Structure formats: C-alpha cells, structure tokens
Amino acid sequence: MMGFLFSLLLALTLLRESQGLTIAECGDSYRRPEKTDILVTCGTGTMELAIFVCPVMFSGYNESLLALNNRFQDPNCKGTLDTTATPPLLRFQFPINESSSCGSIFKITSASGTGIFQDFSNIQTINISGIIRSSDPSIGIVTYNEELVYLYSCTYPLEYLVNNTKIDVVGSSIAIKDNNGSFVSTLSLQLFKDVNYTSPLQIPPTGLNLKTNIYVEVKATNLTRKFNVLLDRCYASTSQFPSNSTYFDLFVTCSEDKRTTIIVNGDTQYARFSFPAFRFTEQQNLTVSTYYLHCITRLCDSSACKDFKCNKKRRRREVEATPPPALLSDPTTISSGPIITSTESAIVSSQVNEVTSISVGLGIAVGFLSLIALLMVGIACYLNKKLRQTPGLSKMLNN
Image (tube, rainbow, N blue to C red; front, side):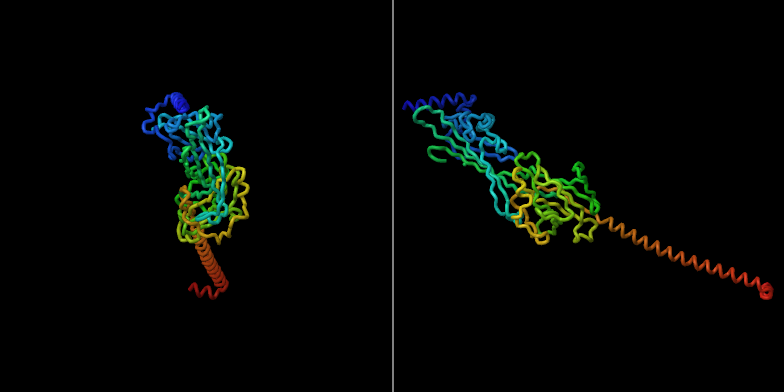
C-alpha cells in the first residue's frame, strides 16, 4: 500500500514538472496508452516522431523520462513538448544520418527489380528504425509503472524513374508505427545548352536543330548527404508514358550509345550527361520530331556508389533487345516538357539544291544560245566579205 502511495505521489510530482501541462488540458486523452499513440513522418532529410503525451503522464512519466534508443544523457535525443497541439504531443526529430540519428538502425536490403526495373537484379531499399523507451523513476524494490515502448520505422526505396516531360502487451505498452517514405520529390531533371550547366535549354516551337548538344542534369535538392545520385538507365520515348511506345536507350549502366557522353555519375548529389539531338525515323514525315527523356535513378549510399557504377551482375541486354519499359505504378514520377527536334534544315537544303539545279540548267541554255548567235554573226560577216571581193557578183547584187 505504501509503495502504491509513493508511486502515486511521484506521478503527481512529475505532472507538476511537466512544463505546466495539467490533467484538465489532457481531457479525454488522459488515458491508458494505446498502440496508435505514435505518429511517424518519413521526411526527405529528417524523420519526425510525435507521441501523445497525456497517456505518458497517465502511466506515471513525463516528457523528460522518454528518449530515443536509451540515449537519456543526450538532450538531442529527447522530445520537445508541444502544448499547442490537440491533444498535446511530445515531438522527436533527427536527421537521416547515421552519425546523428540517436542510435537509429539503418538497414539496406536488395532484391531483384520488377516492372519498369525488371532489367536490374539489385534494387535497394533502406529501412530506418528504432525505439523510444521510458525510464522508470521508481526507486523502490518494485514498481507499479508499466514500461512504455514506442517502435518506429521508415522505409525508403532507392530507385526512381524521373521523367522529363513531367508499433500492446500486458506489462509494457508498445506502440508500433511503420511508414513508407519517398525521396522522389527531391529529384529533378533539367536540360541545359552549355557544358557548364549554367544556361537552361529553351526549346523553340520549331524544334532544335539536329545534332544540337543537349546537356542533362538529374539533381537531388534538400536530400540528406548520406546519398548520391546514380543513373542506371536513361532513354527517350515517343510517348510521355513510356509503355507501348518506340524508345531509344541513351545508356544502360555500362553500355552507352557512342554519341552519349557521361560527365559525372554516382559521385555527388547530381548526375550529368550529354547527347546530340536526334529524331525518330517514324516521325520523318512530320515537320518536327517530339520525344521524352526518362532516367531510372538510384540513390546510393555515398560510400558504396562505386559498387553500382558498372555492376557486371546486372541482367543487362543489348539496346535493341531490351524489353519496352512497363508503365510505372509504385514510384512517383516527375514530368516536364518534351524535346522537339526540327527537320527544317534538311528541307531548306533540299530547296536550295533544287534552285541550284535550275540555275545551272538555265546558265547552260543561255550559254548555248549565245554561242549560236555568235556563230551566226561570224558567218554573216564572212559572207559579206566574200561578196565584196567578187566584183561581178557585187555589181549584180547592187543592181
């Protein structure tokens, strides 16, 4: 009985220390813990956790007695009370970085690709997980406080298609929350007209001239420094949606078109390559050729990107034997405008050649007629001279 009263007194003391939060402010949320008492947000640079704090108080704890992965001595691993939320929350936040994530576990798994990634035998996913646990303040031989355990987890795929067109048991209250996150919102694809990547490429309505150099950059913005950008495959297709359309591979891992130049790939948070503008032969009867650029983009651990730059274990095929990509369903896509190339220069050249041929023909005809005229004048002069040299004939003609 004395032990129960002591624990109750201790709990009331902790309540008074809880930054002014009272039972009245908790309302209906002042209750036993439930397995849904944790919220997890899987951000692109940080993970955010939120715990309903009133059930924590009900169990005899306050916000100072919870910490990430038993890091009770590190203030960065403790939560911040948010009394403006309804119900009040205890918020935790840490960057997606092993060195400052308060002991969270980073685990990368690999599996064979499916769907649009079917040509790749090593598609990676990273899972970041950990535990928020309570520290029992009881100092007696026994305790009447149940242990609070909150398990969290975020899973991120590390392969994306970027388009250019466009956690309850008796004795312990356990809350579990698994969420899926995505880094695709940090990725963008942009076209430039110069090798320094300073001037964005503006495509006129009439299209680019054939063989114009196009400089491509796939870049991650506001992404944790843990990952670099590595392009596994980039290709062009006649449709904004790559399924069931003509396509052309610019490069697939170690195999690249001889006109494609890879400038940087897998070494930083952007990848760059260039290729000359071309047209699809099926569009040869059109004034302009329109197509879309797509890049299958891997986010690799910066310390391990070198293992994926030219992995011979991948199930690569020749460009002409690569099956058409399936319509992407699971990963999100980013779209922007089409690439338009012009065939006008060829038409103009043809017209110039035609005019040149006509000019040459006219020149020959005029020259031939001029020669005949000169011959006739010469013959007339010769005959006139002969007539003058023959007196009888000259006199006869004069009479």
